[in-house]
Image (cartoon, rainbow, N blue to C red; front, side, top):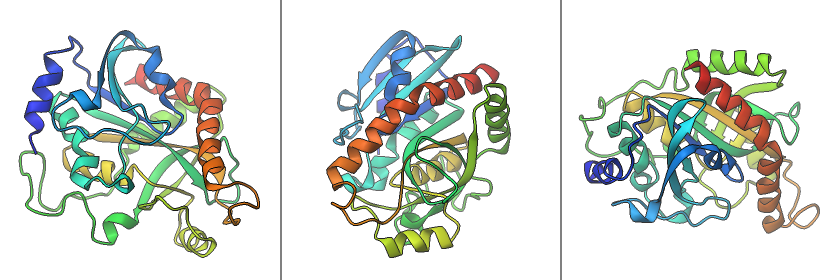
Length: 276
């Protein structure tokens, strides 16, 4: 894949040279609207970039200034379940690396598996269970691209300890309750059965979602430091569709939860950026 062409295209269209990137998940794109002197680039205009198709994912880069620092916000992402390859899903991560990004903040909306959680909680990702990758669909499958990293990169730790400590400190300063737990990544797009949810919780998952883990693998391979944050948009109870929500209503619940929690999540991310 031609990462350099995409990076050159972007450099020619913005004066900003960020070392910090933030990816916003479902219902969490308010951060992009807060940038000063923003340059906006839809994914569809950037060479090699796939187009986001899921409601709540605008699919654009916003380059600008946040908390006094140059930052790029990816408003939305593409997912494996949309029919894209994992190379396409993670394409932007390597482009960001070529643009000089050193720190990647990944956010997502996730279902709560931990019974102590409540909808609206923010979870700091301590680690992940990448069921997509463990099943043989790893984004590093195939010939290694040594220009970015080694053949067998260590994923321990996948989520940078210093960034996690910083997030905890910012949350404490803001009197924000911050959960911390393991993100279980599945392929989707169907929601999990009750038995699958029990299995994920039994194996150590505190939240479940359909993104983030593969992006983290590619980012760590390329030497980026990763901070992961999950908005617990709903509790993954395994209730049959129709008894509480239809599948479409559940997706809108995810979007609504993101909108309601956005001020707290934005404040947390801004606080981390200020300290970087």
